[in-house]
Amino acid sequence: MSSTGKFEKPSDAGATAPIDRRRFLESVAVVGVGAAAVGWPPDARAALPSQSEAGPVRLESPATDFELNEITIAALQKAMAEGHYTARSVVELYLRRIDAIDRAGPVLRSVLEVNPDAFALADALDAERAAGKVRGPLHGIPVLLKDVVDTADRMHTSAGSLALMASFAPRDAFIVERLRTAGAVILGKTNLSEWSNARSTRATSGWSARGGLTKNPYVLDRTACGSSSGTGVAIAANLATVGIGVETDGSIACPSSANCLVGIKPTVGLWSRSGLIPVSYSLDTAGPMARTVTDAAILLGALTGIDTRDLATDASEGHALADYTAALDEDALKGARIGVLRRDMESNSPLASLIHESLGALESAGAILVDDFSLPSVEELQVPKAVVLLCELKDAMRDYLRQRGPDEPHKSLTDLIRFNRQNADLEMTWFGQEFFETADTTNGRETQDYRPALARCRSLTRTMGLDRVLGEHQLDAIVGVAANPPFTSDLLTGDYPVVRNSSLSAVSGYPRVTVPAGFVHGLPVGLSFMGSAWSEARLIGLAYAFEQAVRGREAPHFRPTAVLDKD
Image (cartoon, rainbow, N blue to C red):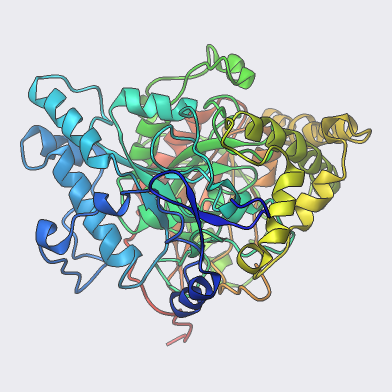
C-alpha cells in the first residue's frame, strides 16, 4: 500500500508496485472478476499444473465428466489405501478441475487462490502413508477454507478485501492447526461476501473486491448466498472434498441450502474462533460444509478442542466429541419429536410444496411432528441483534487486526473505512460501507446499550426461545426452511429478502445442521435442524436419517438460467 492509502499489488520480492488501475478495471469489465488476479500470492499459479503437465482438460459435461465427482472421504481413503490414487494425484485432479470450471467454462469464481504448497503437503502425506502411517480419515484429503481463516503460509487471509493484501497471517488459526495435525491438505481459500457481509446494509452475497461475484453452479445467474459463498459453490461443484465455512448468522446455512450441501453450524465454542477474521464475539463460529452428512460429521469431530486463545472453547469440555460418526443412524428419526417452524410454509408456493414433502418424509421415517408452539419472531430480535453486532464488530476487528503483525497497516475499523474510501473505485463499485461506519461510531462493548441488548438477545433465543420450546414440548430438534430458493444475483440493487430461520440458533449460539431437501425449478433448497447447546450428535443423527430417506443431493448442472415454465 502506498503512503496515500491507494492499493498496490504485492510483488514477489515483498516490495510494492502500483496497479495500472485503467487496465485493471478494463479487465474487470471484460471478465467480471473483481481483483482475483491481484489477490494471488507469488507462485500460486505454479501450483496449478499446466496443460503439458496434467494433460488436456476435457469437460464436455462439467456435472459428471470428472473422475472424483461426488467422491466421499471414505471412498477417497479406500482408493488411496488400495493405490488407485495418491494425495498428490488427488490434489492435481482438483486443481485441474478448478482451472477448468472455476476460472474457465462457467467461471464460478469460487476459489480466490490455491495453496502454492499443496503438492509439497500432499507429497509429505504420501510418504507417511507409504511408511505405514495414516493419521486418520482426513489424511491426504483436500480441504478449502473460507478466506477469513488464517493460514501461516504463502496464502493471504483477506475477507475478500484488498485492504488486507499487504500482510499475511502470522499464525495458523486453531482449526487450521487441527487440520494439519489430522493430515488434511489445505488446498486454497474461497471467495465470500466481502467482510462476511458485515460492511454494508445492501451488499450482494458472494461478491468481493478480490474475487468478483461467485456464481451458483446449479443456475449460474442465481445467488450462491453468503457469506460462505465460495466454499458452498466449490464443494458443490466438486473442487475439493470438503470445505470450511464461517458464519455469524446464516452464513453456513444459506449457502449450504443454495448449493445443495450439508452445513453444520456448531455450538459457539465447539470449534475455536482464534485466527478467524471476526464479526461478533457472541455469534461467530466456523463449521463444516460437505456433500454428505457423514463427511461433515468427520470434519466436525477432527477440529474440536480447547484453545487458550478462545475462552469460549472452555465450555466445550465434557461436551465435545473427537468423532461424531457414531451418531450416524438411519433410524434416528424413529420416535423423535421434531418441532416444525412453520414460517414460510403456509402457502401454495412450490417451496411450500417441497417442504411439506420433506415433512412427510420425516413422518414416514418415524418422527413425531409437533407444531403447537411459538417462538420469538425475527422482528423482535432485529434491534437488539443489530446493537450487539455493531458494538462487537468494532472491538473484534481491532483485536484481530492488531495481532496481524507489524506488516499490517490497518489496526482498526477506522483504518479499513479510510482504505475503502481511498480505493472506492475498486472496493465500493456496487455498495458502500454503512455498517462499518455505524459500528465505528459506537464505543464498542462499552456502549451503554450493548449489555442490555446482549441480554435481550440471549433471553429471546434461549430462555424464551429454543430452551423453552425444546423443554416444554420434549423436542429432540426444531426443523425449518434453511432459505428460500436462490434468487437472481443483482449487483445494482443487492440481495433480495432472504427467508432465513437461522437467527434463533445463531444468536443463541446453539447448533444447526442443514441438509439438502430437494429442488424448486432446479434451484436447491435445504432443511435445517436446530437444537439445544452441544446437541450436535443428536442433530447429526436426525439429519443423516433424513438424508438417507430423501436423497436430496444432486451434482450441479451449470445451467445459465432457471427454467420456470410449468411444462
